[in-house]
Amino acid sequence: MPRTCARWIAFVLLVSLLGGGTAAANDLGFSGRVGLEVTYTPVPPASFNIGADLSLGFDIDGFSFASETQFDLLGFQGEIVVLEVDLGAVQVAEEIRFEPAFSWNELSVDLGIVGVDLGVDWILADIGGVQTPDYTMGAVVEISSGIVCGFSIATLTGFGAVDLVNLLGGVEAPFSYQLLSLFTYMDTICLPAVQSDVTIVDGFYFEEALVRLEVDYLGMIASSTTWFDYQGLSQMLFELGYRFEEPSLSFLTSMTLDGSFAITGLGFIVDLLVDVVRFTSHTTFAETVPPGPIPIVFGGQAFAVSFEICSVVVTSETVFDGSFLFAEESIAIDAVIEPVSFVSLTTFDATGFAGECVYAGVSFSGVVLYTRAQFTATGIESVTFGFELSF
Image (cartoon, rainbow, N blue to C red; front, side, top):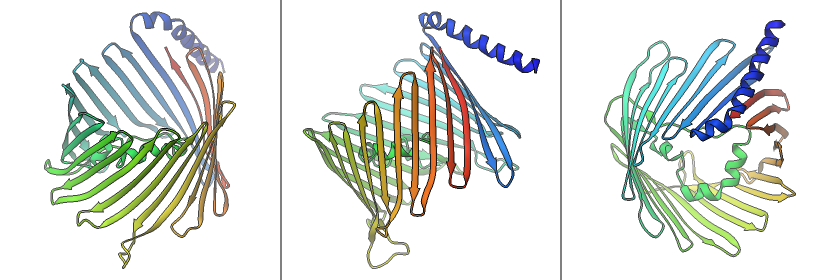
């Protein structure tokens, strides 16, 4: 008991010292952050696991450092360290991961000259198993530029690396991603968006290339994304739409083709914003599996509605499957009443209640204390307690 009290006293003193030094740190161009998150997860039939994530970071003019360490009842589980240096026209970053053994080391160099950005990523990864590690090298060369009149181009070439779209945030259709922001918001309430990586494969050979063109000019929005592999053309995705200003209304159509120019997917998006109400409709068509006389069939329909009342944002998402049957309904409530914030997400499927996620946090003097819980009709899935301190 005395040892526990001593630990809490030391923690309170640390927070006080860091909080008191915030002004001095800012004067020196230094900022930092500390976070600790503890998660309780039941393990059926009658056990549980407790995990802890410790995050640290600081920024000095032109340099930043961040690390995240993961533990659970079995011991050390992972470590991620990120170093970044900004030299003006040149940015250098390195990311090292252990999961729990060494798994990833990525060195990135980005150069910007006269509106043209050139980047090279060198990656050393373990593509083998835990017992038999297999280290191999991959590289990605990226060239991008925003030229004139809303026109931009980006090319990525992978040697020993595939899934290059993950370097573009995993976004295959950029304008669809923008217009479907309500759906993205609903997907990331309970679990934050995870940044995916390129996939390293055996052998340092040409594996994949990606070329993306975007146009956003005088209300017209259009994009083209083309994938190539060592055999040639593998996939194409096109977007074409228009944005109106008054009222704020957007239409967008997307089409996906495979290497033989067969249509494998269609998408139609309507996004309308009137005052504090936003409505988004997303209709999809997908290729038949196995292939049939009709190349594509109805794949699903989703609607999202969001509105704000007295600083409370309510968002609803309704999904119908390819059989025109109800599949899922999600309702999110997001309220911020300083210094308290609250978010809840309730999900229903065709059988009834499917799950609930609740987040509550309070912030004061650079400190955020929060808790998050997820449960379904069968019981609790996880409970998290954490704090973040910025100075």
